[in-house]
Image 1 (cartoon, rainbow, N blue to C red):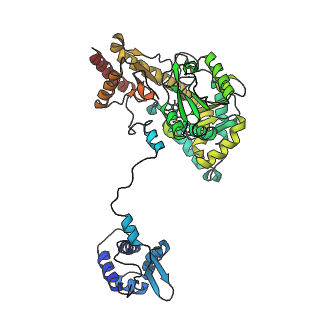
Image 2: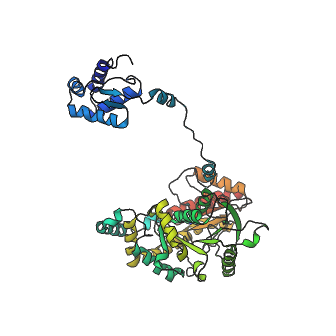
Image 3: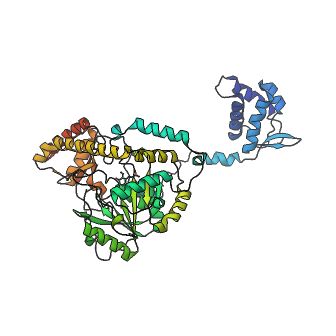
Length: 492
Ligand SMILES: Cc1ncc(COP(=O)(O)O)c(C=O)c1O
C-alpha cells in the first residue's frame, strides 16, 4: 500500500452516500455494516487508513460515540486494527482468501455413512397427524387448563437452583411419585434413586446404547419392531439383529444357528410394537436366563401398557425377579403427550451413578418445572383419572374404526385383536396391495403406515398399522370408510 490515507476521501464519500437512505437500523449499526462490507468486498484494502473518529463524525453528521462504537466493534472482530499514535487501519484479514472461499462452490450435502443409514429409519418429512398415524394420543382430550395451571404454579415457586445445570437424575418428587406408580401398577422393583428422568424414551435408548454397548456389538431387536429404537441403535454403531416375533412375542428359537450373542436385547413385552403380542411368561423367564448367560442387558420398553381393554395391565419383565438384568424404559409420550418430552429409566442400583453422571454431561438434565408439575399431577390423582378416561376414549375410537371397516372385514380383511394399545393392524394379501393403498391414501390426504416398513429385513408381512387414538371418532369413521371402500375396490 503506497499511501494508506488514499482511501480516506473515498470512505467519507461512500459512507455519506450509503447512509443517506432512510433505514431502520441504528446509525452505529449502519456505519458498522457499511465499513465491514467495504472491507469484505475489497473496496477498503488491507492497510487503508480510516479517517479519525472526529473527522468521520463531522462528515457523516453523527456523534463521535456512535462512530467509536462501530469502529471498536470492527477492531474487536479483527477487521480493523488500531495503531496507537498512527490511527485505525484495515487489518490484514486475507480478504482474497475469503473471496476465493466464497466463490460459488456448493456446500457439500453428503451425510456421513451413519447419517445416510439413519435416513432409512425416518419418514421423508414430519407430517401433521391425520386419522391413522400410529402412536399419537388424543391431544384433543388432554386436560390442558389444569396442566397449564400446575405449570404456572410451579414456575412461580421454582427455586433458583432449578435455573442452574442439574445432575440429580430429576426432580425427587417426580421420582417418588413414579416409583409408587410403577411398583403398584407395573410391579416394577425400584427405589426412587434408581429412576433417571430423561427427555423421552428415545433419549433413554440413546444412553443405554452408548453406555452399555460398543460399536459393532449386537443388539437383538423385535422383527417387526419400533423404528425409533432401530434408528437409535443404528446411530450408536450397533449391529441390529432382527429376531422374529410370533403370537407369544419375541421368539429367539427362530434365530439361525451361529447368530452373534447379544449385548443388548430390546423388547416391548407388554404390548409388542407393532404386532400387539404379549411376551408369554415362559419366554420372559427364558429371556432373563439368556441375558444372564450372555451378560447382556434387556431393554424393556413399556411405552403404552396403560391401555389394555380386556384385562389388567401385564406386570413388567423387570419385576419378575430380583436383580433382573433389565433396564425398564418408560415414557409420558403416550399417556400424556409427546411434546412434553419426558420419560425415564429404571436402572439397576449398580448403574445409577454412572448413568446420572454421563447423562448430565451428554444431554444435560432439564424441565424441572414440568417435572414438578407432573409429580403434582400424579399425586393429586389427575394422572390415573386421565389414563382411565383415555382408556374409555380409545376403546370407543377403536370401535368406531372397526365399525367403519366392517364391510371390508365381512369380505375377508383381517384385523389384529386390538385388546390393547392405540392402533390396529389390517393384514393385507400382498405388498403390491400395501403399496397401492399407501399411494391412494396419500392422494386422499391420509398417511397410511405400511407394516412392511417396521421390518429390518425381508420377507415382511404386508399390512397397514392404523392408529386410532389421535383423531376424533368422526374423523376415524370417515378415514375408516374410505379405507374399507378402497380395499373392497382393489380386491374385487
Ligand atoms: C414402541 C415405542 N416406544 C417408545 C415410544 C416413545 O418414545 P418417546 O418417549 O421418545 O416419545 C414410542 C412412540 O412412538 C413407541 O412407539
